[in-house]
Length: 271
Length: 271
Image (cartoon, rainbow over all chains, first blue to last red; front, side, top):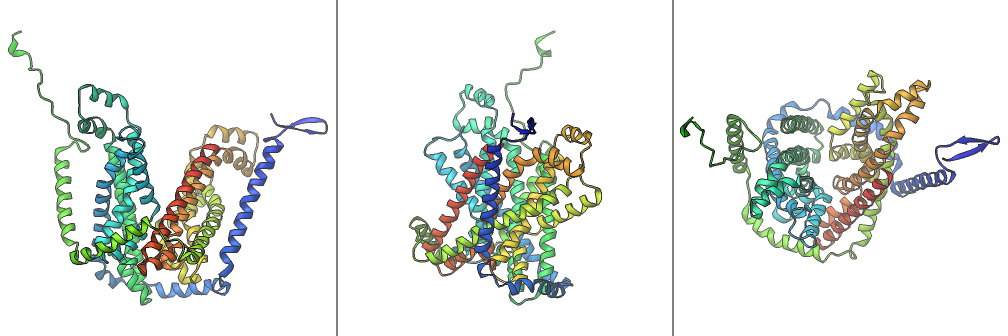
């Protein structure tokens, strides 16, 4: 028990003096690093603009309000596109994620040293690159449009869905797998009868959860030309039509809140 | 009892339906999904000749990814990386510093109702607006550059961290809080001796996770002018320099992997 002598009597302390020193040094290092990063980051900052920000914000506010409600007529079609990008992209991601997850899970992978690392690499690459960057790439490869958005969302979803799915597969009850194996089932039958029933609720939950995230992401993909309501946002920003921008923000916010509510309801019903 | 009275032992087994048990709901949902899919796929306009022409570019991108070019744009990449990393560090620290009081205020078991509602409202706003939209507004107010990115990432850190911290505080073991209260401790002492020790390991884990997310996001908000590696990547792709773009993507993936790997180690060590 860490104690210190106070007036010749032992007094209880939370940590030993070495622990305290290490902890203090750790906090100091974090603080120093933060200050250093701050110095480097703000080296080229024009502080005049920063001090000016409240005025700019007030100005921006006065331009953005009131929103141009009549602009809504032009937003229904892009909104439909946005929802399609999210839904079809999620479907594509989920279809591709299932085999990746089966290869990545320790208990279903055909080879621990070849297939599993490859699957994990696919998962990490897909997860580290944001859908907006995927969209940026795909727009320059397959041209602007909804298809680029769908593929971008799909590629981004693979990593997320596959990661959660393979963790679910690794947590299944092995007794059922053994029972089905004992009947002489083939590999495909094993997956169908022993693994699928156990992970299906998790799978549906993950897919709906990803769909909800994808709705948010597909709303902004248009900024780089990948279709949906973001195209309208980009067009309005380019001509500084702030009342239209406000209207688009309201629509995006409404869609996001609605999709979150739907996904929460569905997940609640499944699990 | 004759043989005819004995119910025949079922010779055939029919697999029960998965996920949706009720027949009406099942066909309703499947039918609705099918109708939606047909409508959605029909409304996607694809310019197949453009896609075909793009395949060659896609192939070049894959080659660029396999033979990345770090050197010819190294100066731009270095500046972007330094901006991204410093932005990530400062915004994570500032975001955590702001979200701790908000998280405490948003915990139902220790905050008065008025404070609770205020803090929950802040969290809801921060979570509803996605990073890109916040970045657009901050760039308009504070000018281009990493300072706007820093503000954006700090803002979105608040929603994430304060929400999870508040949920964690609501889940603490009340017995310890009661024991500390019974000693006549003040509110600050209650926080310091009953709550902080219980939530600290998870708070550190969440902070590391958020650092990871902030780095990934910092690669994206550069597309709308908020500094960081995203701007460099955007330029590289716009110029069709796929080998430089591949190099940047590999650097991003490597840093995300390193951060994820080290943070999982630190979390194990803390918990």
